Structures are given as structure tokens and as C-alpha cells.
Length: 373
Image (cartoon, rainbow, N blue to C red; front, side):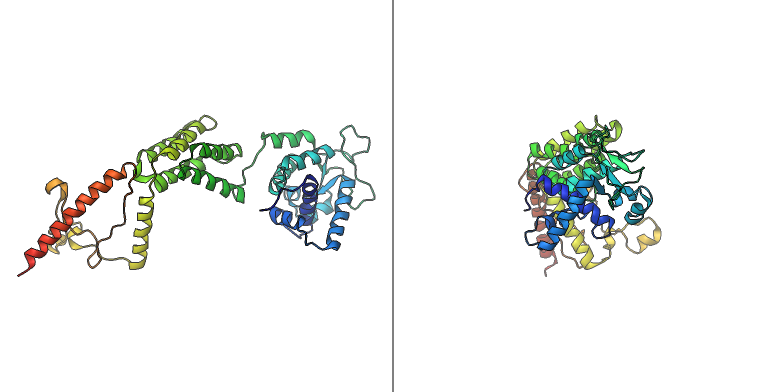
């Protein structure tokens, strides 16, 4: 596991990652890989020296080359943005320090914060001066990183808004998204309601769409609880409906209620396993014919062909069960996909299915005896 980066490493990483992206060397989304490279002790001394020189130049100028962050917003790629004078990002020294501290050793968080702040950056109306009251560090007129008068600026106030959460984005395509939804799902499956609440809060606070979480809760109710507690599915659906009707933040409490119930409920993945087994059989064996006695016969011709003939109507049978009836395709042995567990309501379901299976065995044995000479 990678160790958290130091503040100096994070500052350098922001400079390096964004500068490389503008030069077409590395995309900004490879932050984790870049962080690993930055902390790789095996890096060559020449490369380290070169990077140190670049970092020093950037820090002295008080500028970060922003690559796609503002270049894309201006309708230009990184290189063109730089040539036009709109591709460089000015940042207040205090904001730069605050950015590194807020990242707390997490390279991905640093770049996410930087991207959000860049989108909210103000436009400098004039070339910043060394005695400016804003505290923005000026760029030397002879520096290759000199600023255009309309360069965007990240100020401390803007960055504080991003860090405090008034401006957020939840990266649905990033590892953090899938890691957190996985943690929520595993907490529910593991009957840990407090942990489930924590990960739910993390995702909601991070800006994740609550309706996405609602859909995942419905999935959890069927996959990990199933018929051990069928009420779980209804509660998850009700939470989804509440979120749709109320919106945020009112509807989020219903999601929390559902998450707690699901985590606390009896667990069974018997339906989940049974469904996968049935799908596997269908894919392996193809489209086997429906037995004639199970076919619908809405027309006279179909009846003449024997459709539905000898079908046993369950409600006319003892205990509403046609013992020994064949429901699988001809030539396919009966399967037992669904195997209830000894938890929750499935305890009683299992007892009933075992009783019905015994009736089938008796009926089948009787039929064989009747056929014997």
C-alpha cells in the first residue's frame, strides 16, 4: 500500500501532473500512477534533478500549467491554450499551501480539488504585480511561464468553498466511486449497519446521486437478503420512491433507514445463486421445447394437437399441489436451483419445499409401480 504523500510531494505532483498533461506526456487522470512515480526511490538522479528544476521554476513564478482543466473550457487543447495566453493558471501562495494540506496525502483528492477550483477560477483583469493587495504571486515578464492579462486565478476563498464541500463532484468513473459503493454493499451484506451508514454518508456527502444508491439498495435486498426477509425489498423500493418524491436532503433519511434495515435483516443469497444456475443451464442447453401439456391452447386447432392435454390444475389437487407433475422440458432432468438457507423466513420455506419434494418422490414411486407388469 502506498504511503500518504507529504505536502511538498503533493505540491510538486500538482505541478508535474498538470504540466505533463499540457505537454501531452501524461493525462491528468493518471494521478495515482504519477504519485507512485513521484515517490519511487528507483527514479534516476537525472530525472529527479530535472523535476526539481521544473518545480522550482513553477514555484518561483507562482504558476501551475493547467492542461485540460481550463484549456478544455476555452475550447482548446493544452498546447493551444498556452499559446493563446489562456492556458495558464495563477494560484495564490496561500491557496497552493491550503490545497496540499487539504489533500491529506491523497494524490487523487489533490487533483480533484484542483480541477474543481480551476473551474471556479476568477479571471485576472490585469497583469498581477508584486505589491498586489490580493497576494497573488506575479510571473516574471521574461519567464517562459509569463501570464496573459486574462489568465484565470485560484484564490483562497474559492478553494475554501471547494474544500468545505459547498462545491463538490463525485467521480462516478473513478476508483473512489466503485470502492465506496463496494464498501457500502459489503457492509450491508456483513450485517454492519453502522458501517453501512458511514459509507452511505460518505457517498451522499461526496455528491453521489442518491437515486443511484437507491437502485443499489434494491439490488442488495434481492441479492443478499432475498426470501430470508422479503420485507427488505419493499423497504428498499419505498426508500427509492421517497427519494424520488422528496429529493435531497429529505429523502436521504429514507435511504439511511433502508440501509440500516437491510444490514440488520436475516441474510440469504439462495435466490441469487439459484438465478445464476438457471441462467447457466439455459445458456448451455439452448431453447428446449415447452412440454405439450404445459402449452396454452387458445384455439381449437391447438387443442386438437394436444396442447394442454393431461395438464393437472394445481388448485384441484390435494393441498393445491400436483405431486409428481413434470414442469421442466422433456428430456431435461428436474433441477433444484433454489436451496433455502436456515435463516429468517427461508427456514419455513425450506421445510415446505422438503415436504413437497417428499410428495413428489411418493408420487413418482407410485407411478413406476403402476407401470410395472
